[in-house]
Length: 69
Ligand SMILES: [Zn+2]
Image (cartoon, rainbow, N blue to C red; front, top):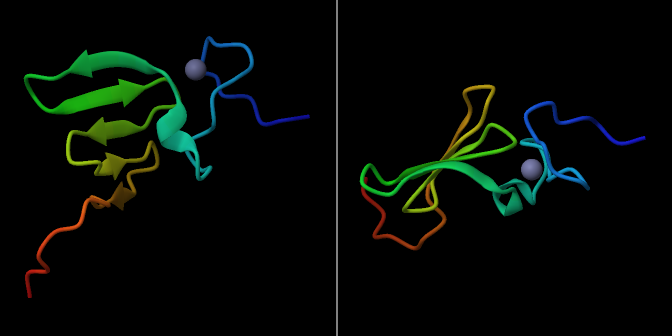
């Protein structure tokens, strides 16, 4: 039995926020003018590929950037 994603109305359910495929979930609210989208698993996905998980964990952008020290 898989973990139920209560925010996800899709069948089969989208990847939960704690799975590696979480950004494959459907977008439920898109705010391109603000540069972010809310996925149905509760993840906030930013334009630069950064993410905020429902538990508050921040995933920084995976797009290659110059490293700033
Ligand atoms: Zn979904």
